[in-house]
Image (tube, rainbow, N blue to C red; front, side, top):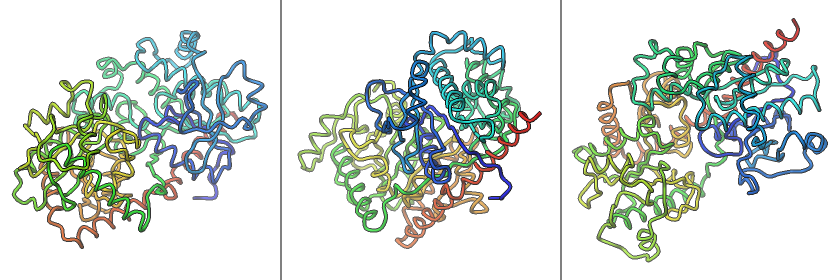
Length: 552
């Protein structure tokens, strides 16, 4: 890091996912926290929504001694809990209750239109909730700044995603001396175009973001995101692929690309790793045997895909297609046990499956619907089950590929596996993430951190990064196979996955170990210790702009 970079005395960072585990941004912030906390020593404050009410938040420990004088002084105007985020580094977190701002919603939106031309007229769904939280977060920063700090303190406010845009604009108006950074992890309109089965990439140059927002009923989210991008001191995103999207759909080039790093302190080492891998494989095979009535052994090749339930965007459809084609692949050297670990509208764990598992017996007949581990509320309208039935994939005994849908969050208490995602993923031989829309891609990064080689695409930020590290097309022996994906080559992607799994099934033990060690080595290049400098550069850009603005 250059000595001449300006660095903040305080950073406030807000996100809907602070102490609120709903997606990949939680991983970005919670793993980066330790690196920033070590440098800033409690001068990094995370602000998240208080979604918990009277119930305790499992990711947060309240501490009444923190800023007690300020909290007492503002208790009538701001309701908040102050404590520590239960992640490495234990940074300070402020959870703000935003309910009291709803009655003033129209007035807040009116001011937002007057100052920044943000269109909130078409708001629906989560727009109001996110905006009231964001406004509350802005008020918290304004109050803290007024109470403790002054114009000689270098302060950065870092807002993540459109949900925090209103707060950033509020701060820009009220306290212009605070430098602002805005990160869009994925543009709302880009995700919507992709999710609505429209070709995103070939036509990206021709799409007009404002026009598409009207067509897809996304005007308000797009408007707040666009105005925040234009008014932030430093506008950032997480990969080059999303930077192109920002330029085309928000009409604003990003100032910096901030790739997502991670900490690997959750990866077990040595003998513990070997033991946990063995336990994970045992559990995955036990559940499969009980569900399907088979007698799969430890030499079966275990594969999975995981992530949010975005059927097309995450490539779940092409994964199923590839597994179906693999059934008839003559080059396949091992039987496959494949999982889809994607949270659906889950009802309850299957009692018939739990009973079989608890009995400890072996069974030679399948359970009814031997495709799914938990009952769903929408069995007849579920995309995964619908595609499996359409392709006549019923996990018959003679099938070389068995594909099982595991439709719940793996938090250790799902009722069937009762293991966390991190405890299960290291049991895999291969992970597959054939994303169509993936600004970065934590799932493949986590897989390689657990020494599991993976397949992804060059439409994922992580896939592009892996190719750049290799200096060419990364192959499965390198730990990551990156498949070329476009708007229209679905069938070729399915074939490429099928061929890569076939190739891997024929690997010798030495080749497998090489792929696993290459995966491990690649993951270490993505540690926050390597990627944090991009953030330092972003803070510098923002602080210089804020200084120029306030020194005029």
